[in-house]
Image 1: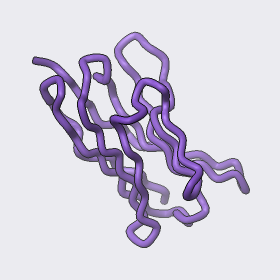
Image 2 (image 1 turned 135 degrees about the vertical axis):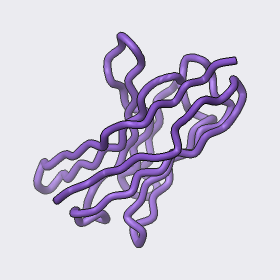
Image 3 (image 1 turned 90 degrees about the vertical axis):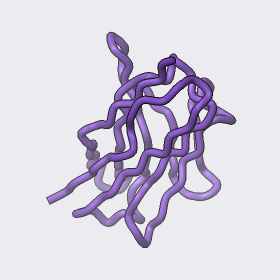
Image 4 (image 1 turned 45 degrees about the vertical axis):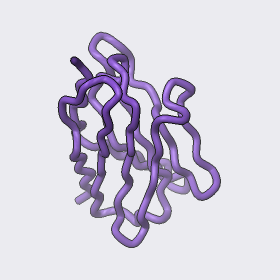
Length: 117
C-alpha cells in the first residue's frame, strides 16, 4: 500500500519559516520524481517545487529564493523548507510522487499552511 504522509504545516506570521516533510512508503522512492504542490482557497493546484535528481530541481517563480526542496532517498522522505513566508503562500500543501517509467502518480492528503498576522 502506497502512503505519502505530510507533516509540518501550521500557522505562521509573515516573514516566518516552516519546514514541511513527506514520509513515503510502498514505493521505490529513488525511482520517483518528488514534488510539492499547493492549492489556495478558490485556486487551482499549482506546482511549488520539483526534485527530479540533482541538479534537476525546479521552483515556481513565486517561491524562488525562499523555498528549498530536499530529498533523502535512504529515509524515503522529501522536505520543503519555506522561509520568508508571505500571506499569499497560504494554501494546502501536497506531496507528490511520479514515476516516469510507469506513469504512476501518488498524492498525500495535504497539510495546511496559513500565513497571517
